[in-house]
Length: 424
Image (cartoon, rainbow, N blue to C red; front, top):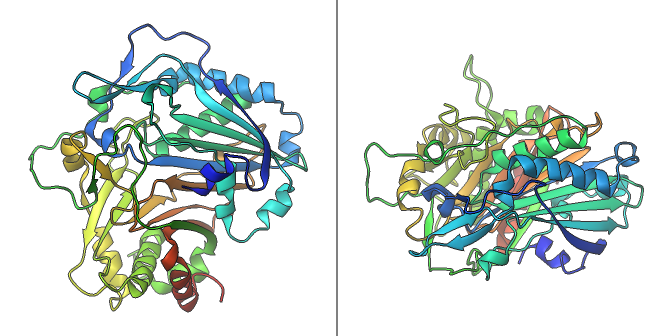
């Protein structure tokens, strides 16, 4: 059970929690449904989360009514996300667009924003995101939870988590930006995406199971990733110029993205700890560079690729691993083919790296004010682990959120200290 689930029961630094529902102001036509694609269904055991922290200056004149009215405007645009999951006669899940609403959680925190942000491990932000998994009764499970936390200084945090079956991290962050615009009094519009636009059709169908996913025993109607190991999260900032680039000096015009260098460093560090067996295959999840799908819409359009080596990772150079990551193979079509036939784990089926570094998280301005801090992660990570890389408040920095088996975390952090990713 994740930390956010535990504190949802009233534990941790968040208290006086109150639950209600928010949704669209207009009724959806009776009988309207949203049909998940094969790729959507392959992601169903995962939940995507983000937490945004704002200063007292921004939040001073912001009331609960203001926040909820902006949510009403948001869900008027994407009402299908407030529906509930059902199964058809064959057992295939679909979303019944019955306007049941998202769950809204109010809470208070006994820290100031300054005190909260002084904590070196930003995974403490897990407390700002309320989570409950889908199930065991699908028709009664909200697909979105929104948490508003008021700090004792008057600052605000907004935590948003949704079922990955609806859309990827880029969709989640896009929706938060829409909400921020509505909260600032701007008009918003979210285009619909057809089922055809959401599918990835393979021109060369194959029965081969993609390497980036792992089949698990049927989970029924309680959508929780089955793990035998206790997982832990750790979050830290680092400088691109001082802590990432020196591992891969620029060679002429060959400018390697910081994400790929960082993925190579972390892959090697994890391999030194996880010797038997070494992680010879990793999964890379990032924005589709070819923009094959319509932008600014809600869908699972992220590129899911697999990179494999046939040599010892712990002894490899960072450059060798980066070159392998560059050649990663897109497996979305294969996942689309088999996603609805079985239950799968994607994040953490193999050691997984998610690149959100191109998303301008600090463009989510409310009343003209950017957030002081943003946190991103995934709930329901498999035992091989997950690394999420995204922008920091300072453009010259990156944030890394890492989820690994608890038994490995301290040893991996020790490897990070040796190679300069974190301070000794």
